[in-house]
Amino acid sequence: MARASSSTSHAGSAVLGKGASIRGRIAGEGDLRVDGTISGDVALKGDLIVSDGAEVVADVQARAVVVEGAIEGDISATSSVAIRASARVSGAISGTSISIEEGANVSGRIDAQFDLPPELGGKSGR
Amino acid sequence: MASTVIAQGMTIEGELTSDEDVVIQGTLRGKLTSKDTVNVESGAVVEADISASSLSVGGQITGNVTASDRVDLMAGGRLIGDVKASRLTIADGASFKGNVDMDV
Amino acid sequence: MADVTVVGQGMFLRGSIRGEGDLEIRGRIEGDVEVAGEVTIGDGALIKADVTARRITVRGAVAGNLTGEEGVRLEDGARVVGDVRGASIGIAEGALLRGNVQTGHGAEGQKGRARTGAAAKPAVRAEPRKAPAVAVTAARGNGAPRRAAAAEPVERAGPPPPVVPALKKGARAALRKRSR
Image 1 (cartoon, one colour):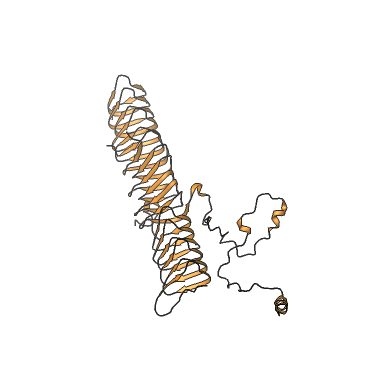
Image 2 (cartoon, helix red, strand yellow):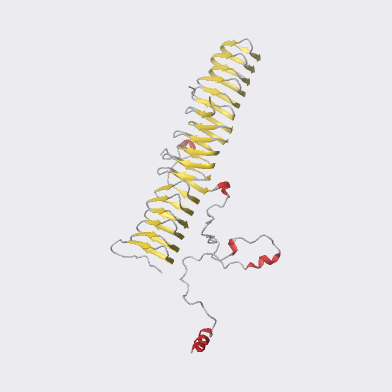
């Protein structure tokens, strides 16, 4: 079983290799790229990349999130979320900016913070 | 080039309000108010009261029509309803049944 | 030759639009839109309506559900509050959405749960904290095979299972004795 590095002082970059699998809670200061499988919870200060072929069954929190593989769980990003065409996502997605490429398989909820124009019941225009 | 075009094959039901010109080639049911011109083209079917600056009727209208300027009923056009306009022309070959009030 | 219906910028419709052909909306609509062709919602448009079409492209503001059989695309500048369903869904950076998203044909109302096809983990997240229902139900003559919901739920955030499977009490001792 591989272990994601969770260094304290310097924010490193970790990779969970293709054949590797983690079950449990992952927390880290740095970035994480997942090529393998995670089942649990992920909370990163850095960015998260879920590669094509990776499987994540977990709620994830990170700065920016890029999904090319499969995530089943809620995604909470403090920065952007990019769902690529090869992704399979199921869960709630929130971030400052969310983009989904055509071809992605998405089933869930997106909650961006904004107001509709007043004619449509919003508080203000933009 | 009209600002609003209701193409053939499209049906609009409800109240339309426009401050630009409107061309109807499809079907309209309800009420249309335009500050500008309205063209009901051949093939169009309108079941609505229409209020416009000017109106040209090449299609079929069942409803009352009010124009601040003029109403032109073209050959092949058909209007069943009352007309209120300061100017009115009815072409040879047009059909019309209703009252006319030109005292605007 | 207008096959495209255009709702101009200065137009306000309270009612419904239905029919064949394509539709371009630049003005304001309160009601209901259902057309067979493509719908383009311009950047100044204000739509308070559910929109159903073969394909939908949004650049303006929509309060309502969007259902595009072949696809829905929200471009930069789009503001949508409502559910989006379509065979494929594209959301550009700068497009803002608040609602449920469901890709796939026929978009079965599996709100929030993708059927992860290939890797087929019978992954049903919300339910599986309880012990899996024993599949006694099969015996009740209910012909239809029970769905994955009754099968092993995926365990999350639990302690990793012991490397050695738990043996019955004394079994380990018995094994050790045998191997001596």
